[in-house]
Length: 186
Image (cartoon, rainbow, N blue to C red; front, top):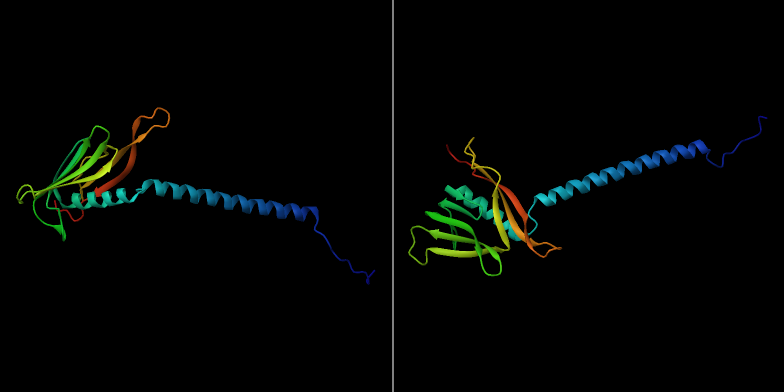
């Protein structure tokens, strides 16, 4: 019997079951990681502005809030009084009132930005820009907080979209942001 060699040409059933079990566990782990990455990516994309107009408006609001000294707001307007002024050469520094307000035409609502240079001569001291159409309203999630050294304002902007069933305009969140006044002194 010492001269007989055994050669093994196939796996046993137990070895095949072990490999299949380990393979299915590996696939399940990879699938759960993929689902988690997809969910995180989707949540991140929903929290970010989805178009360039929203991104530009968010940056503009942050700069104006940072330079403001007084803020007044309601569902249909947001006003900054301070020293932020846009000029042909960039940003100027003079007393300015900037007011975002909802403007209703016969067909639709617009978000309009009015900038008034308080030291300028009328009518050159005022500029008007149409920011976006189908704007619905502002929603303020917090009061202006002067706690700590960085006042904050949490704000949500809503646009109107057509309801697919009734074809009516319904407000929908466009984007939300937290405006922070950096380096503010108390």
